[in-house]
Image 1 (cartoon, rainbow, N blue to C red):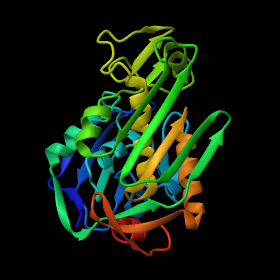
Image 2: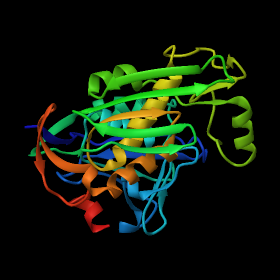
Image 3: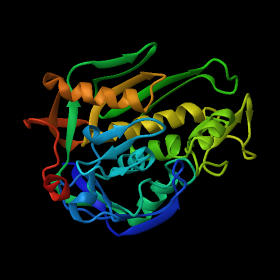
Image 4: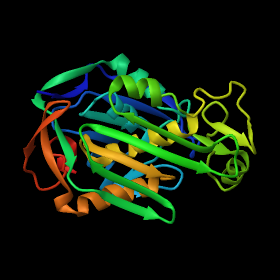
Amino acid sequence: MALQTTIKNRVVCEGVGVHTGITSTVTLLPAPENTGIIFRRTDHPGMAGVVPARFDRVTDTRLGTTIGNVYGVKVHTVEHLMAAIVGCGVTNLVIEIDAAEVPIMDGSAAPFVFLLECAGVVKQTQAQRAIRVREVVRVEDGDKYAELRPGIGFSAELEIAFENCKVIDRQFYAFDLDTPSFKAELARARTFGFRHEVEYLQKNGHALGGSLANSIVLDGDTIMNEDGLRYADEFVRHKLLDVVGDMSLAGAPLFAQFRGYKTGHALNNKLLRELFARRSAWEYVTLHTRRQTAPVQIERPIYVGGLAAAE
């Protein structure tokens, strides 16, 4: 039987937020079974600082994924850390953070994967649950779309198109989610943007922590980073990394096939909201092995223990 997991040891990292420009300290802590993934803002007292990592707590999808709670406390840019957590197979974790934004690190999920590996992933005693998609669910925005189809485990394929940029142009990538493939194929893919966009954002109080040290920056068809790309198709791989992080906000591992075209944070979150609005489209299952499941009837995806239940 596939068991729930947490980390063995407390680990800490520090870095700057790409949009706020504020340095924050993140502490990853072991969590009891059935806790799920929970952020705790240590600069807010008690339960006011607790923010469950869930799709229905997403408050903003501009420039990244922001989650918040009923007290108005928010955590910005959670997607890369969340992708690392699900990519490393961690199901229960408390994330303490002393400011409003998760550090951007090098613009990828690789530093967070390293952090989790240093902490050590350990099995717990209770079985894992997953959310199995039973029907095709699709959302669209013009020519953009994102959809979930029934599948075994989680797989994803994505196409992006930047017709006015020859360096990116059209790129396609597909992969099956497991720790080795995530680490090798997606984790090191960095966020990217265009020089004119970055300059505009910075003039308007955003991207204050952005730099060539944590982003791929393009000036027309020129990559400004001296070290170039980590993958020839790093752009689509990073967009898939974002998909993994956004889909992790389902609240449990997804058994589904994700397909998307030019999707982003807003459409990814809209997809999860559409999925859970259709009760016939999903069910909980208990994992016996990675490729075999047995149904468990639960009304909706909630955290049943720890701080999230109290919140």
